Length: 113
Length: 114
Image 1 (tube, rainbow over the protein chains, first blue to last red):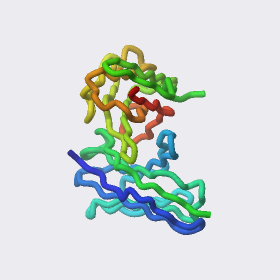
Image 2 (image 1 turned 90 degrees about the vertical axis):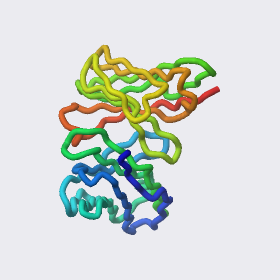
Image 3 (image 1 turned 30 degrees about the horizontal axis):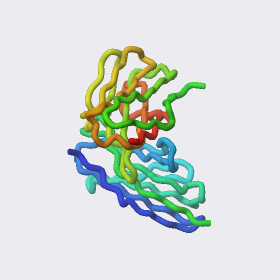
Image 4 (image 1 turned 135 degrees about the horizontal axis):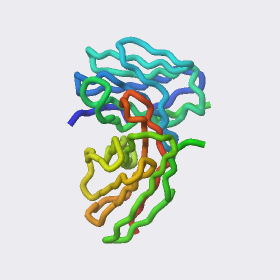
């Protein structure tokens, strides 16, 4: 069974700080990686996807991928209280663009005003 | 507005009862999925369907059944064989051409046992 590991948190950061969320995965052949945000009692929403080694930036969010270390992270700059949510890392099982998504258990982020 | 509609929002099941969760989408998506989420846990795949009249088991299909008679609809039945059904159930869809693409989620159904 392929695994995706995340620290469950909670991760608490002050408003305006950088929040760093980390994820490791077991399937060395995985090529596609995603970060979903889930507010309490709501459904997940996709905020970032990354497929190549390095950094990908979108507004205040930066995804970082290191396939050699089997590690993907999400940085949130200038954190806001509205960023308080659970962040789920997801990886497509196996190589290529097909295959089921394997989700981590999520990291709960709390941004304090 | 296009989207995925799940109903009901809350559902209670009695011992030995089968219950059906509804999922309807008007996004013209080919692929539909059912996930289960337990508190503090990630999403686990129950069943998925890439095309009408075809579906495959996910990682935790035991005690569940599905049908895909129409493109728009993918109902999930939680049978009496599922001994621990209390969870948050999420339906999702995608165009199905590639799993690199975004999954669209419904708002979820919270199922509890009476």
